[in-house]
Image (spheres, rainbow, N blue to C red):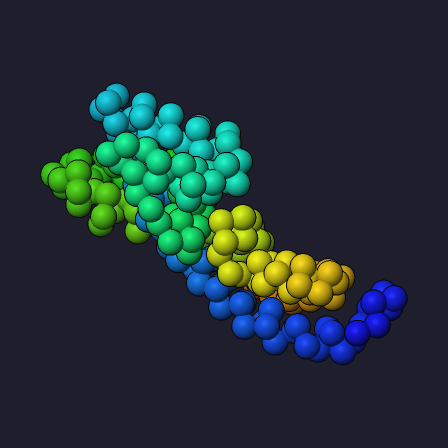
Length: 238
């Protein structure tokens, strides 16, 4: 290999399949982490609205702590520090630790999106549920959440893209995603330009179309719910 060349096409074609294969690890970590974030985020949003201070304040504390500390520190804690804690100590596989780290970190942001959706529900919906003698469970599952979640789904898409672009941090705990493979290949040949550039281009090729689709979805959902609100106002004034 000619090490004097700034860019070596032969080396680029050699490492591309190896990096591309790792894209499934990147996808898996993103999707699994996002599913975890969506579930925990909803629990946090409901916990934050609890009338029980013993639930509400620990949830608020957890959200503020996670949002005020770097994702990298949280990943290191889950993977390196957690096994050393007496009694609780738990050793996790790198992929599992990475998914948990991503999921918990972004659950705090998704909880705020859930909260904005819940806060947008008209007071009359709560009052109607009470007058119909709905239980608290049925009020949430049959009335509030079905109306609160659909309008905020496009905002979830933005965080899914952000999470996807954060997956290179998982290389710090040895998850073999694209950046980890690129760094390993680069250190083996002491050539980093080609593998790192390929990783950047793959992220660009996947992130840009995804961001475009999310913007289209936001616009479509915005029109749909604006029309729905307009119809609701007209029905009320009739």
